[in-house]
Length: 279
Image (cartoon, rainbow, N blue to C red; front, side):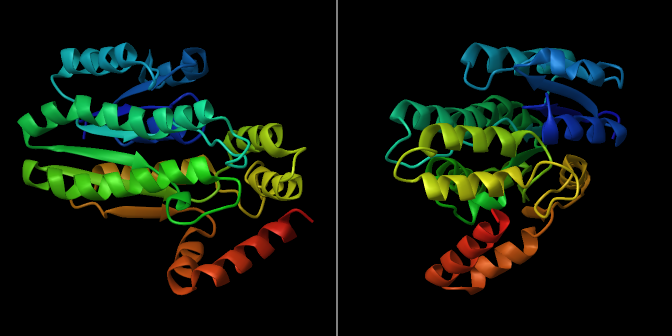
């Protein structure tokens, strides 16, 4: 694996940070990109190259891929991890924020793939690993923008899997449940800022509490980011990777429940669970 080159986006914290470490430990040469370069300083000590990377900037994305390709001639593994969760009622969240959510979670991911695919296609080899979420298969109130992006990435990844298969390129989806990162706290704060005092305030406080339950070891929905990172390594190194890797506490059971239950039954079960989490 020493000769394989991995590029990880959104690597300043959480899943991306742990994925960069785990891929390096597995023997890959790793480039880690994020806007907050200072957060990635510890990665340098592990032999990981860090770079500024903003997935809303064409110049930044093109420069990052060009840097890796200039050094190695290719990107073998792209881990599309950059993203965030924008929560709030559809009525109250400004359209500009909705556009930004899609720009980061979908369009930035798509552009990163556009940039690496030509080199992978020429090499007739490559692996694209898109970090979605069980949120790409299920839904929450006040999460229309976020879940819309994750459903989009799921569908895009499925289409690309068929599209790129003749060119020797695998497309894999990682579907984490709640992870013990800053993601849930930030998403919850944004939710309360958008809808915490208006007509949706009761729902907002319940959902914000559920999002917060992913923060801190031992919480019911909290899975360490390093667990997700291990799934990413498996996806990156398997000779024939699975198309999807649900990972984390409750991921398999929630997805199974979604497949089995009718929509309204799932709505009721899931909402009652969130209400219990909120106390």
